[in-house]
Image (cartoon, helix red, strand yellow):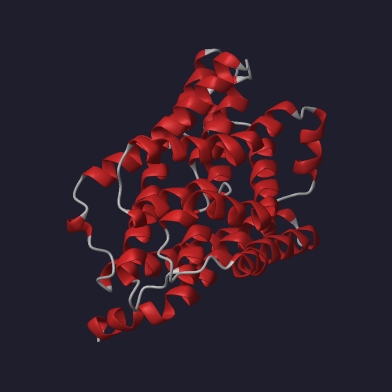
Length: 315
């Protein structure tokens, strides 16, 4: 029975991906307050810098890597899809636990999510179109439609409902939404791997190592550059490092499902793209934990936070 379900999974891949994204974004919206966006106006430099990192810096860094390292076309497309994504809701959680600037993280995620309606298809068309097989057309309109329906709409609906409900209740519902979305994500990963569309053996250890280095380098450049070159605070630098390295992989999986699917003549290409996306999603969970933990230790060491204030956070 399980074998039959896995064999049929490619037909439901897009449905599972879209459901997972809607649940995650609705849950995030429940605990996102409009005030978080207003507060950043008073100190806009970190916000503007974060936008430039994600809109210009990361795509150019990705293109530079692709230029010097020869990779299969499907792997290159996977990297460019990561580069084109806005920050994900997990970056807000990591920033909160790492005692970073939570308002900046939420504002960046929210604004980049809004801009993704236009920037994601633009970045993919500029940087990735040459590597996509000619029979696969880049449906810019479809991508914009899916970002609106499955990302912006549930986020906005969650924010509206969050304002109606009491804060305690909205946080409770948000946790359940996130948990259910994680179950859907588990189905997404298990189905993608179990259907046989992703052949790990064909790529060896080179691609996982490259994905790890890519995520780590992005974080180091942005975090250290913000701290030592731009002279931002530890809190803001930590936030920008986490926000730039933790992408909305849920959205990238949805777009990949819409573009390539998991069945038919392009199943091998789709498998390579998903290989990068799933790897990056897992790697970023570990890489982004480093600046969060480091910032907590810095605050404790400098006396700006006591161990009791870190209860429930990172150590």
